[in-house]
Every structure is written in structure tokens, then in C-alpha cells.
Length: 220
Image (cartoon, rainbow, N blue to C red; front, side, top):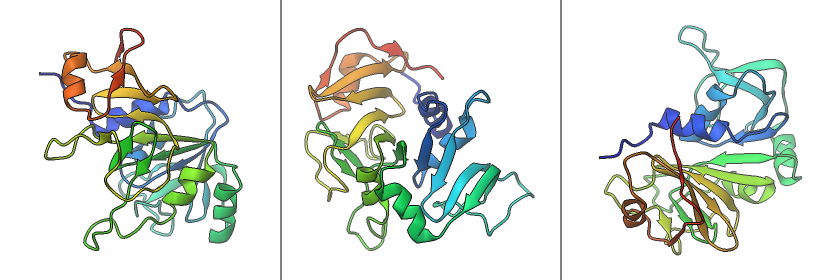
């Protein structure tokens, strides 16, 4: 049985595709871990919509400053040169197209790149929030999520059944089983965890996967 990637491994794999000099927003959940894995030879500026530009890694135990929190309500650090801005100015950055990458979680992604990462259940995620701004305002949207639900249902769909956050925005999907590009042709499988066959992955994916060449091993 193929080993699924951990949340940390998914985040590390995603971090490898963030180029030097990028301005990046990290969403709630697994994406918040991505900032922990940026290599030392890169200078990446992380932005939080709550008004931080220059978010560093999560704070170490005993060094937390609870006035410095990310969108997941976790204490973080500030990099040299980092700053705080008004909440409205933070959204000007997002809506003005100044964010290069939005790394975001999802409940569903369709074969057309539609993003659904909120539901209307009042006992669950409370609303769409700033995700809709990030989905349409960022130059690139990368999704980091588990490939299936806890019940084994595919999260990569032909059509999303949950309310959409934004249509046709996702460019790449990182899961615990694969890396998949969203293109005009459809979903192109790029990387696959060792021990899992393409046929087995397709069984866990509602949308049709396109195989251009043998997928690379997804090893982190």
C-alpha cells in the first residue's frame, strides 16, 4: 500500500515551486505550514490578509507572541523588514493583483480549476471570507489538500458540488498522493507517490486524469 504524504510533506513539496522574490499568501489549514520549508537561498515575502507583510515561520514553543497571529490563529514570527498594515490596505494588495501566489486549502477542485473551499453549514467553516478575494486577485492559485475526504470520497471532481469560491482559478493541486496541473486540456498528472499506480489514483479521482508522460515519483 502506498504511503500518503503527511501535511508537512505536502507543504514542503509545494514550497519547492515558489520562486525567489515571490509575494505569497498562505491560507488556513495545511497551507500555513508552507512557510516553514522555504529554502535558505530564497527570499519570499509572505502576506496574511489580517495585516502582516513578512510573515516568518511558526513561533517556537515558549517564544509565542499572541499579538502576532496568522489566519489560522497560530502565533508566527516576523522576518527582518516585515511590517504591519491596515486590514483594508492588506486587501488592496490582494485585490490589486500584487500577490504572486495564493496557497489555499480546498474541499473540492473541479477539472476546470473551479475552487470550493467553504460550505454553508453553520457548524463548519463559517463563510467564504477573504478566500474569494485571494482566489481571483492572486496571479497563481495553488491548492494543498488531501486527495480524498475522511470517508474516502474524491475531492477532485468533474464538477464541484459545494458552493464555489471562484471558477477557473486553480493552476496546480498538491495532495497526499499526487501533484496535478490544471490546464485548458484538463488535469495533467505530474507526480505520483511510489507504490500507487495511475489506475489506483484514478479510482480516487472523480475527474479524468490526463497522462502525458510517466509521472515522476512524488518523494519529499
